[in-house]
Amino acid sequence: MAVSPNRRFRDDIYEQFTRIGKAVSSPKRIELLELLCQGERTVDALARASCLSVANASQHLKRLQAARLVDSEKSGSFVIYRIADESVYVFVHAIRVLAEHRLAEIEQITRQFLEGKDGMEGVDRVALLERVRSGDAIVLDVRPPEEFRAGHIEGALSIPLKELEKHLPELAKDKEIVAYCRGPYCVMSIEAVQMLRARGFRAARLEDDVYEWSLHGLPVAKG
Image (cartoon, rainbow, N blue to C red; front, side):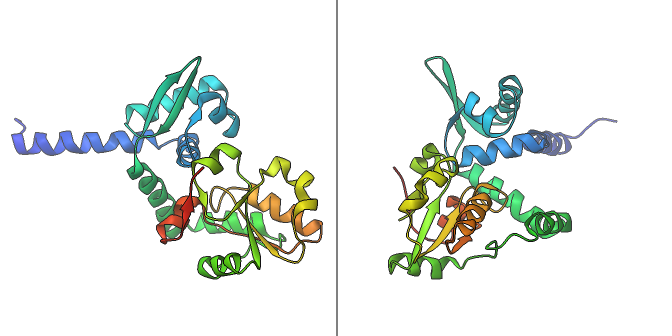
């Protein structure tokens, strides 16, 4: 049976849509996109952060690039990747929000992981901003320095998680410390809060990443 031009048009369009779906059909590729939403990275850095071999990371990134979700450029002997544009931030965020609304397993997995860990309750964004401005709280960015430079909550203090212990004497114990990293499923801020509480600090976790913070019209800085 002959296919009409109208039917062929619709089939061709939906086939293009599936390129995006296929590109994010791997958990590791979603993780790589989330990492790139924090700032551009080399393949080596992405491989380390996602616990992949460089070869596997490179293959996943090529799939993402084929779907036009990421761009790359050569810098000396390195290949640097970045998200294609801000619409990719929106897309990655939408995947997470939809999954949280539709999949009860996400809440169950999260609850089990956080069970028995103090300071993991949500922090009100506006109230936190007011406490920071009044000097009653410190916002602590525990991501790597390159992510902080790419964008951070205005007024946040950058102390990467792996350096936190040696900087503890510099932090005031009379102020609440609120740690954040790459969003609700990033464990760096969880580890930071546990370390701080074990040393006698008042500490809590902010679930937002920088993009979530900016979506609510709250101030973000770069550099």
